[in-house]
Image 1: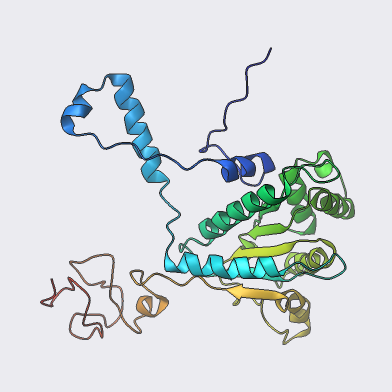
Image 2: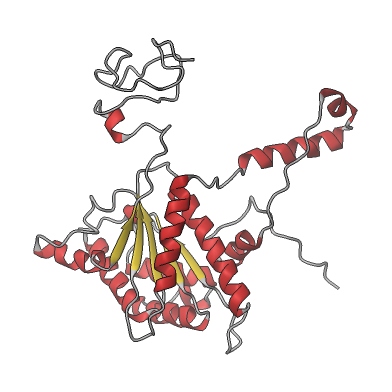
Amino acid sequence: MSAPASRPDPGNLALSRKEDFQAFADAPRRIQPGSLNRGELRALDTAARSAYDRARREWHANLGPIRTPQLAALHEDLWDIVDSTLQDGDKAKGAVAVDAFPGLGKTTAVLAFAREFHRREIAEFGAFTARGHERWPVCRVGLTGNTGMKDLNRAILEFFGHPGRQNSTAAQLGLQALDCVVSCEVRLLVLDDLHFLKWRKTSGIEVSNHLKWIANEFPVTLLKVGVGLADKGLFSEGETSGDTVVAQTGRRTTRLDMPPSPSTPTRAALTGGGCCWPWNSASSWPTRIPACSPTICPTTSSPGRPGTSAP
């Protein structure tokens, strides 16, 4: 008799596979280790101290996601859009693109939303479809700089662990992906790192056409995540003949932003325009920003700003 399967290690998950995404979605909230004083720490034996230190490291490494105003606003918009995409299968659903600067937590925010969406769909409709297939409300795919149409189809099949993902043609992979999505009643298809594509190159236009096909044929809402998608022409109206193909995808997409928090330097600060405070350091002014000094910075109410009497 085999031993019962243990819970997957949260630190050893690949969210591009359905079992790992389910483990991520179903994982219980972490419990914060208790605070011990020095005497209590010294009283622990070696094994107990090692376990306590590891629990503290894991707790601090996995704080969040913190529900900042930016995250709350993004989630509110995502719920409004996703809940409104209830069109029947003969109608194309809309798409969403989260387009913001790197390092602001786009992927973290989208994954948190995808987890809640997965949980809600399973709670409302059950873990299995009416035809007996496993229900997977969310399919998450990460793109690379070399992603073409065949690679995108294969990545979708990789999520489901489909046996035909290794030796099928691009057309066959697309039909197999469609079968998986329909059978498992996927409702949200997350495409992460969309900025890796070179939109105006052959592979980018190819994938853009394929995304249009997915929007037409797959009963899913596309949720795209990337950096500088507007600059890459995803939302352009196609000023040239080469851009027109890409614009077909862009016009169906609602762009959502995730602005920096007030304590994060903005693009204006990094280029010397606008306000240059607050900064990460409370003791020195950022010398790499042109014309930034305590005397000319327009901010006058930042606590602890160098050269002021603020506390």
